[in-house]
Length: 431
Image (tube, rainbow, N blue to C red; front, side, top):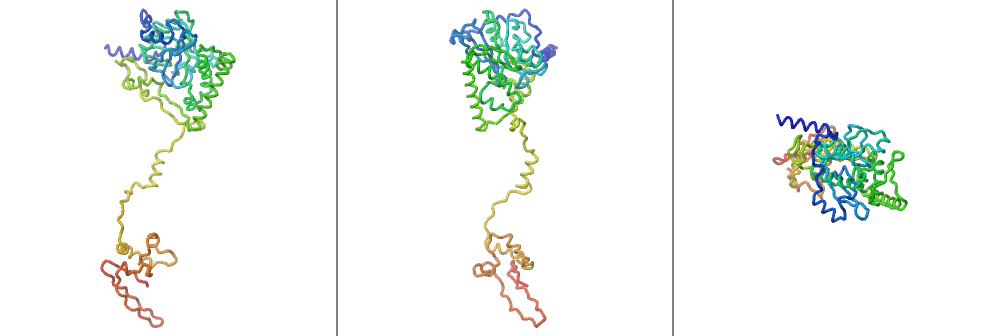
C-alpha cells in the first residue's frame, strides 16, 4: 500500500512539473548556510557572501554557473554546477506546455525565491520577460529547482539547489534587488556556432551572443532593453567597439571551421538532457528511484544523449541511400550465390590442350568470318592449336600419323577419315 502511495505521489510530482504547490511549508531547509568549502572558495577569489551574484545557464552543456562580483567591481566565476535535468529541445520557449526551457535574459527578485517549494527549494526565472511578451509567448512557473524532474525548468540535485539557493539568499539579503539570469542554448563558441549555423534559431542565438559577448568584455551586469523584437544591450562606445571586434574575430573563426569541413548539424533530443556526470546513473533509473537523484522524469532517451542529424546546405536533413539499394549494388558487383574463387594452380601445356581440344573442333566447324570461340576465351594464352614453327603442335599433343589424302575423281568427293588420337586426346581435323 505504501509503495503504491509513493508511486502515485511521484507521478503527481512528474505531472505537476514546475508548477510549485508549496507542499513543504514550515521547512527550514531554506535557511541552510553556504557550505564551508564554498565559503573558502569565495575567500580565495576575493569575494564575500554578501556580494551580488549573476547566473548563467547552458542547455546543451547542461551546466549552470554562479558568478559573483568581487572587490574590484567585476564579476568572476565562482562555481559551475551540473544540471540534473532540463526538458525540450534547443530553442526558445514559445507557449504553455511545450516543455521548452526559456532562452534569454531574465531577472530574479526576492519575491521569486520560494523557500517552501515542492521541489526541495526553487526560484522563478522570470519568464516571460518583455522580449517574450513582444512575440505573444505565454506560460510561466519556469524555475530552477531541486528534484531531477523537468517540464521546462532547470532541475538540479537537492544538494546543489540548496547551495545555489543559499548563495542567492545571502546576496539578496545584503541588498541586491534582483540578480540577472542568462539562459543560453549552448556556450557561444565558434565551434557551436559553426555546427548550428543552419538552425532556424541562428538569428535569435546571434542576438543572444551579443549579450554574451558584452558580458565577457565588461564582466558587468548587462543593461538589457527590447526594441523591434530584439535584445539591445546598452553600452558606451568603447565597449561597443571591443564587442564588435570580438564578434568579427568569432565570425572569422566560424568561417575558418567551415572551410576546414565543419559540417552543419541538428541535435534532436528525446526530451532534453542531463549533465554527463549523471548519465550513467540515469541510465538505470526508472520512475521512482532510491538513488540520490530522487524521482527522474522521462529517463528514456537521455542516457545516450541527443541524436546528431547531419544537414545539407539547405538546412534539411541529409537523405542516406536506402539499405536495399546498397545491397542491390553490392550484389551486382559480387553475386552472393557465387563463392569466392580459390587460387588456381598453373597448368601444363598438355593439360590445357586436353581441355581445349573439343572446343577447337567446334570452332573449326563454325563460320570463319568470326574470331574463333576458343580465341575469345583464351585471348591471353598463346594459340595452342597453331602449326606455326613458333608453337608446333607436336610440342604439346601427340598426334597419330595422318594417312595420305586421296585425290577424288572429277565431280566426286572422297570422305576424309579422322586420325585416331591417343587415349584421352581428340584432335580435330579440317573437313
